[in-house]
Length: 157
Image (cartoon, rainbow, N blue to C red; front, side, top):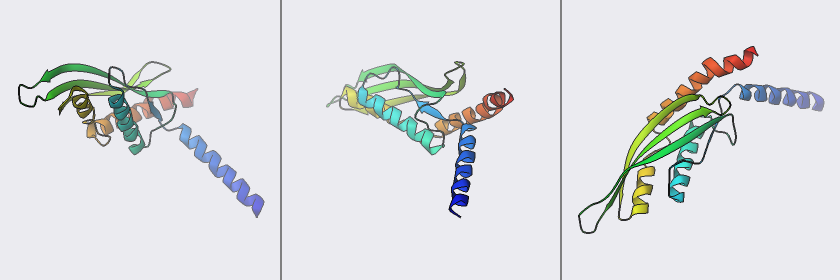
C-alpha cells in the first residue's frame, strides 16, 4: 500500500509539473524611470499582486513585465499651503526575453497630489491598482498570445 501511494504521488507531481510548463508565467522587473525608491517598490508590488491574482506570477521566467515611467508634469499650486501635483505616464509591457517580442502592453496616465514632491509622486504611483481592469485585460491578452503563438511553436519542435 505504501509503494502504491508513493508511486501515485510521484505520478501526480509529474503530471502537475508538466502542466505547469504549459502555462504562461511572468515576473516583474524593476521599474524604469521611477526616481523614488519607495514608489518603485510600491509599483513593483502592485504589479506582482496583479500577476498573482491572474495566476501567472513567477520568481523568474522567460517572460517579463517591465515598466517605463515618464514624468509629464510637476507643478506647485498657488494655494496656502502649497500642494504638489505630479503627472506620470506609466507604460507596462509583457515581453518575451528570448525573442524581444511584446506579448501585450498598456499605459496609464496618473496624477498624484500631496503636500510634498515625494508624496505626490507616490500618490500617482498608487493609482495603479492590482485589480485594475486594464491590467487584467493586458494579462489576458498575453495569455492568449502565448497560447496561440509561443506554446504551439514549443510543442511542434
